[in-house]
Image (cartoon, rainbow, N blue to C red; front, side, top):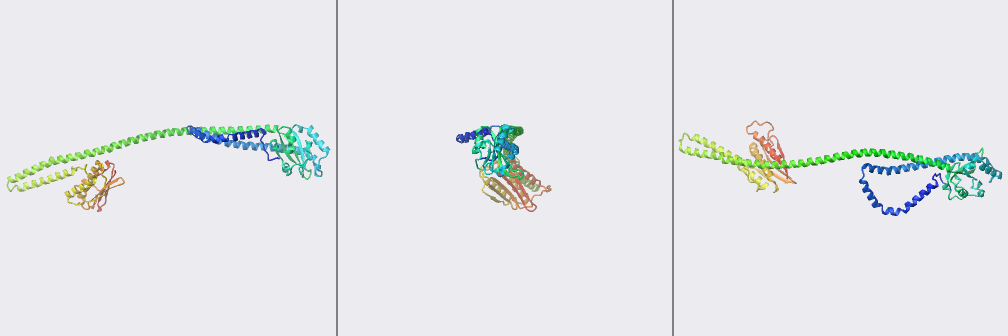
Amino acid sequence: MCTETKAQPNSETLVKESDQTLVESNAGQTSSDAVPGRQITGTKLRHLSRSTQFVICATIILGLTMTLVGNLVSQSIEEATVQTAAETGARYMQNFLEPYVQGLTTAKELPDETIQTIDQLLSSTSLSTHVVSVKIWLPDGTIAYSTDKSAVQKKFPTEEISQALTGKIYTELDNDLEDDTDDAFERSLNIPFYEIFAPLRETGTGKIVAVGEFYETAQALQREINNVREKVWAIVGTATMAMLLLLFFIVRRDDKIIKRQETALEWRMQEQARLHSNNAALQFKVTTANREFSKINELTLRRIGADLHDGPAQLLSLILLRLEELEDSQGVSDGEVLDMIRRAGEDALNEVREISLDLALPEINDLSLHDALVLLAQRHEERTETRVELELDTLADDVPTAHKICIYRFAQEALNNAYLHAGGKGQKLSASHSEGLLQVQVEDAGVGISTEKPSVPGRGRTHLGLVGMRYRVESLGGIFIIESAPHAGTKARAQFRI
């Protein structure tokens, strides 16, 4: 029986059915090759440019979208075209048939004269060129008139005419009539047509007394539908290609920009890596130079200490010896002068020996950092007759020699400053090594270091010593920290990553 309006021709239906059959027949083979095929396709796509990948993806997505849109638009236009043609034909047939069905308000069949008149009009007028069959249905499903006389007074289910009995005009194409038993005659004509149902009303009251059904040839309508479909798909295809081309040129331009930026970024990264490598090499050279300078400086200090000990110290010793000889040979009146010269010579000799002792670094290559700091504290206590509090944690045994020399000189200068400016009060030497951080600190309980320019003789040595300590520590990549406040003592700290 009839359904809602459809506008697909028989040929299109057959194509769709055949396509579906082919898809179903190849389903097993496709599923078996799906995973390797996707892997090969993915590998090929990754080697394409971004613009090409975008065009492929956009073509698939936009193609599916525009195909759906085209189908919806085509179907809507086809339905509207068929419905418009049906309504036009129905109006015409209503005007043609309604005068002959007025008697059906009381009777169940048409008079023979009326039937002959309708037959004559259908065969002699222009209706015969495009209307192939006509039926008049009673509300109970009985056919009161038919071009096929064998169907007259036969009764069929009222599903076909149910919508027309409500006052609606609708149509359906011949591909929907395959299972309709009342359309056997029309199907035997083997020509494309569409079926139109229209209500026939009583004049004056408007009451539906019958339903007119006529079959009109569909060649002209099919041509019109095909023309509309071609126009729709031409517009959709043109719009799709225009959008794809526009998107392709935009993405291609952006792809070129991205490639240029990637090339520039890669060059910058290579240049940065080269500069980093050069900086690392320079840093290594600077560190090596600092270590060598520390060794050379230490050798220089040793030579100066040896020269002072072997030169001026020996001469002063000779002077003192000669003075003793003169004291024995001269009178008592010259004793005081000789005694003054002797005391001056002894003081000079002691000072030169003290300087030599400070310049001459003990052989710490064979000593651990812990033992070197203990030896430093003992020497300072012996020389200054003060006390140094030691707080040494467990220290590493593989501290580089350059660092041991630097730490020894740092602690030595800091203790000398503590003795000079704090009188040795609260002297404390501490060292610790934790998580790769080596920290050495010297503190006292003196009056602190003034930030103003020194005015007292000898104060300038303190600031010169701080500069020397800072240079020593930082030349090996360490951190030098000085903390001091008035009447709160001074703390000098050196930190190294070892």
